[in-house]
Image (cartoon, rainbow, N blue to C red; front, side, top):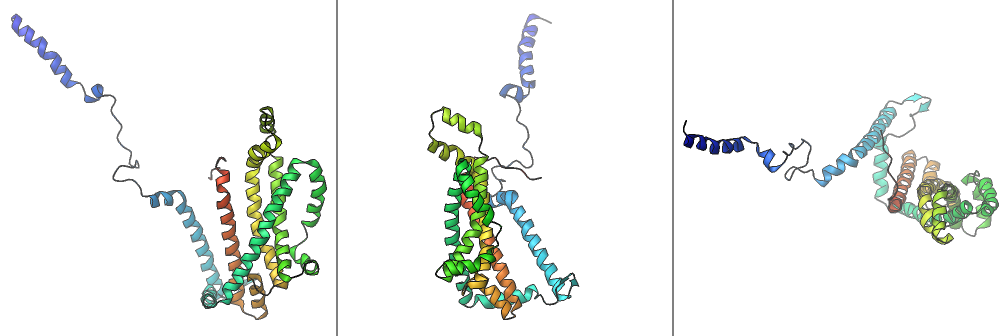
Length: 310
């Protein structure tokens, strides 16, 4: 082989080798193939789909649980189930639903709900203000705790029904009596949970803030209250539920309007479907109000790490 052939061979070999090199070694490492569940430009899940994957499926399970309970209730009522719990005199869900449709066509049913919600709003608002103030004072001051706590522990076990005669004697109107009883029911959970949250504030954070020159007021607003907020919110939610429970007791005895009065009056008139309607409305309104309290307080808990469920 002559020199020209050798030179031609040397010039062609690199070109052949360069053509054999994979493109990934020239342009960089090869990108992995997209996974099956990786959202693409054309197959990205919709916001509704993302919400269902994160939260909607849980609500679906809850609704299914309620539907299953209603079905069991219907079966037990239709077959007169009587084993420790007697369903012979309990109206079936179909009868309750029919009575509810009749109630919704009139105005008096809505007046009962409106009066109850007004009473709860006033009583709960007063309980929130006074309960948080007393709870913070008791959590921050031993003197305040020693003075206030005996009254809290003495009055807290007294049921709402036992307050009714005294409330009627002390207060000028039945409306004020019902609000007072509802206020007491909501007050004690808020006070105790606020006190617990304030007392559990990390002392290291307080000392660090004080060493940096923070005043007692700044420590209260920027360290103590944020740290106690999870416990305070729990007390607010519990207080709302107890408020509806106490409202029922007050309206049964001394009310003229209200969902509690409606429920008790239905019992005296032997209107069994209306009794269940009143119970379900109280439960629904209490659940809705508690949910609103949690949603209103959720911006105050953005710093808190979320716990996982198994």
